[in-house]
Amino acid sequence: MKIFVSVGSTATPAQEAFVRAVEDRLRAEGLVPQTVGRTYFTADSPFTGVNTLMDACEGVVVVALERIFVEHGIEKRGGPTEAAFHGIKLATPWNQIEAALAYSRGLPLLVVVEAGLRQDGLLEKGFDWYVVSAPVDPVALSTAEFNGVLAAWKQKLGARTKKPEAKFNPAEMTVGQLVASLKPTQLWSLLAALSVSLAGAFALGAKLP
View 1 (cartoon, rainbow, N blue to C red):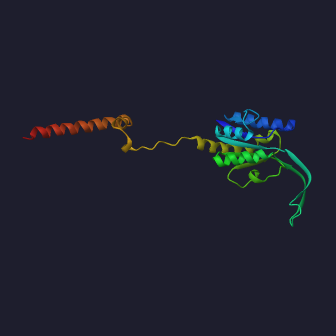
View 2 (tube, rainbow, N blue to C red):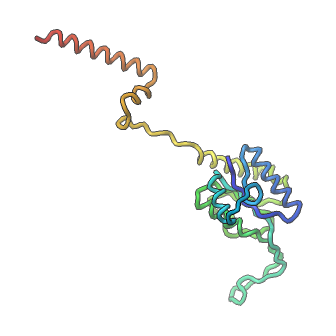
View 3 (cartoon, helix red, strand yellow):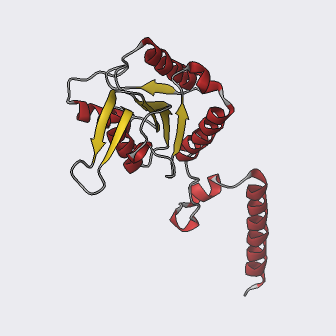
């Protein structure tokens, strides 16, 4: 089962080790991580590549890591609610784009956010997908919280890929299909009933003038 992993290019050895740990954990669960520019390459535009790859996947894992660090900044500058902030860490905007594409497709979504990263948009908790905040350390992928969230997310994967049972409609079946659908005991009962009916019909015919 292919899983789309939304993650930007890593900047530090710690980030790369964490992403590899996420990929290894997915493989250990019997899943195949797929990322544009990491395991999947295309000559199309990045957005086209993302859509093509996501259509072939059954779920999405977003790994939101620090891409931009703002030491000093101002939010809503010039307005009545202007506010200064310090030391803000932001993820790549592709995390938001790919999370939105996953949600619009109804794919089970799991978001892993680096601890201390600004959680806004689809990286926030409180929606109908799973969001886990974790330090950039492979050990964080073996905690009770992460294991529980991963198990719940995998259940959604299984529910999505389970094929619905075919509806039984005798009116749309041929005689051959009806006979083939019977269990052995049902078939013998049907043959016995037909034999009795035929015997009765012959007996009745013999008595008629």
